[in-house]
Image (cartoon, rainbow, N blue to C red; front, side):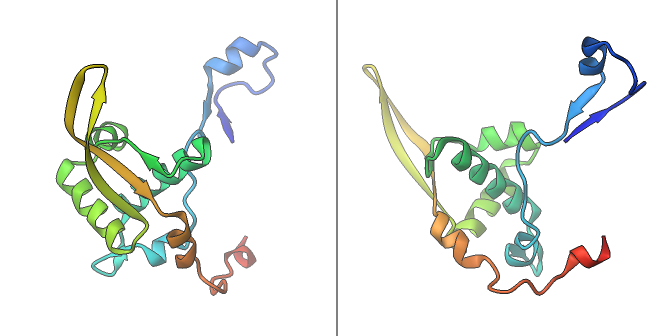
Length: 140
């Protein structure tokens, strides 16, 4: 989906590209996550956002394990480290994600304590509602 500002009848492609914003360039969040991924009986928007990024990366790469640290999510989504840690714990509690610390070796240098995220797609699929109890399309 692209939103274009200004005169839509302009033929100049360069003018349109300067005034266009691609608003679907990343994650899409299924509505039912807001009912299944909760914190204190409210949608856990930080955990949902983190999970949507991991699912996006899985769809893009086919991988289920990612070497991503907290700073990746801090920079991308402007979340604090403490709120991210809590979100990761809650995602582990519902068994869709596991954090693992490892030592990696780059050439002759060992780098300890690197965070790896392991995504459990099958566990996420078990959260999917068996029937759609919300018919939102009738209101459109």
